[in-house]
Amino acid sequence: MPQTTAPPTGHAEPVELRPATRDDAAAVARIWREGWADAHLGHVPDALAAARTPGSFAERARERVADTTVAARRGVVVGFVMVAGDEVDQLYVDRTARGGDVGGALLRHAEASIRAVGHERAWLAVATGNAAGRLFYARQGWVDEGRFAHRAPVPDGDVEVDCHRFVSPAR
Image (cartoon, rainbow, N blue to C red; front, side):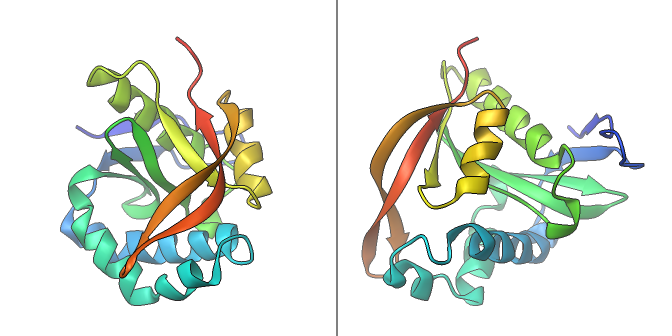
């Protein structure tokens, strides 16, 4: 069921959160590819960067429609979040919509979804070099539990990425 959040100060349009459809996959892939590059290039192993081709984002966006929620303004997708179990697996906002509350709305939605299926807390991984991402989650009240080696999937297996594990605040 779509949910609308009030626009933050300075934004004229409210954000609608709704389940993704197959028609959203191309927009999700573009936002994911651009956001991933902004947050990860220079902060992850070369093998992972090489595996993250435009085609890989398109394929994964199509495969993950069922666990994706999109944020839209006037019908245009401006962000998305993917949930896997108790993990906020992916959260990206279009470059044109950053700095408002799109990311915060998506994060709150993901946390509520995770709690609704019985998990007490949600978690996510942020590349250690992604200072902007780490600051965003901290500002949202999430707790940095420290560094860990996150396993990121690539076609030939996994690549180890130096990350920080953030957990949702206790409620």
